Length: 220
Image (cartoon, rainbow, N blue to C red; front, side, top):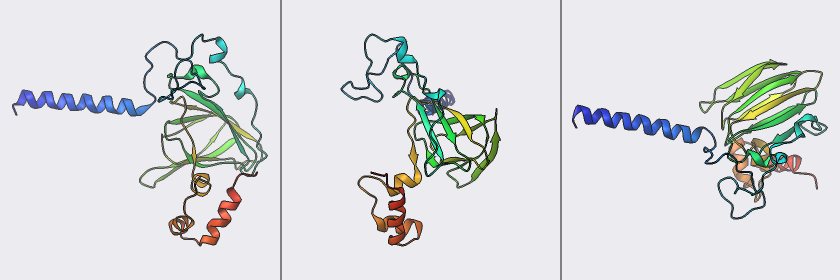
């Protein structure tokens, strides 16, 4: 291969890599000004089909103005403002959430498979952290007015070790970043993960697995 041909090949591969990374970085780019989600429309696509006759309310919500109820086992509440609450976010590649924490409250270890998360502390103080794919734990204590980033797909958490409530606003580079809570995903899936698989993975007994499943099962 001639030197010039090799140069063209390298340029092409660099361009291909950059383009590929941009595709993976967030939601696909929109192809029109707006595409308000028809949440009940068919057929289902990668996102939602566009509805006709958009209104201002399709781009509006008040859900983040009210603190979530934290009187639960974890002592935390996540209030989403994604495409399911704001249909106008469809194809725009962004969304928000509000997370409230009671004293000693925890937003337990979880991942967002489709989005990077950045949080801004509204009040209180939190211990936060994420784990890299090399099993390195990166953590910090953040307080009112400070920002922390959780990279896409990595396991992370927030814990309020203070004596007063805390709250953050979280932003995502996805209209619907998705959430997989590690414990709930593994121990309460439908159909369930076999108990012997979980017992071997966590090096505990099947009886202990069943106890965890019982503790995490949604109340009927």
